[in-house]
Image (tube, rainbow, N blue to C red):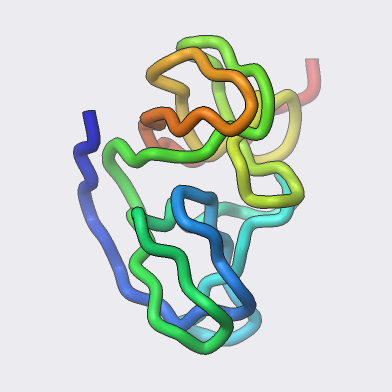
Length: 120
């Protein structure tokens, strides 16, 4: 169930893995591997990652596949871990909603919603 919406091409600011969350890079028009829930997430890389300086497509909205960084429940809000993989969001920036349950290294569809998760 891969239904990407708006996809934008960026220059990779560092290496980006396929099926991972991307954040804003250092310069305009760049994307970097998301490294946790502390920074806003742009979207998700496609089936193709990129090396530093290469061009990379980032899905900004819609449904995109993301590699899980741990156990995730169906319907859970997710964010990025330090490797750009999806993990359950508890505080910080939420990137989307898991459309399937997952365990580590599963590739699952995520509805990209972007938001903020307040501490409970």
